Length: 116
Image (cartoon, rainbow, N blue to C red; front, top):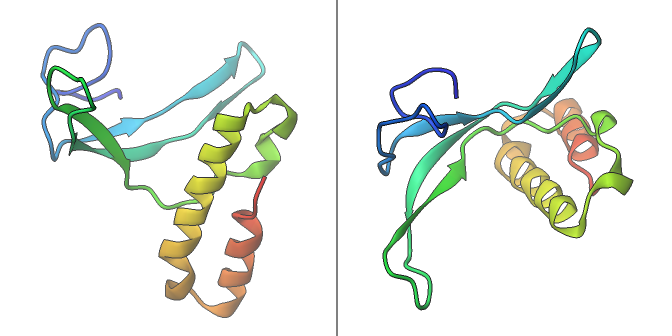
């Protein structure tokens, strides 16, 4: 996240609190050639204390609902957890948006969010 006051970075000094919204911006940049970045907004949410945990935790809920362009993904480089994350994210995008768009857009959405 580039803007403050809250951020997940060494320079961050504002504690995260439930309800805060941050941007999650993982990316890859090849100097002098190109860059790829995914930007999603996430909300800070309270999480249950895990079994044996010493305190309650905070987690993140993804708010952004847009497919990730699968043309930029090399499936063979994904481990099973990464593949599952992407498929689950796309299933959520499809479930949340399919009934809100026209038939042509829905057809595109189904293709764009198909299993990797």
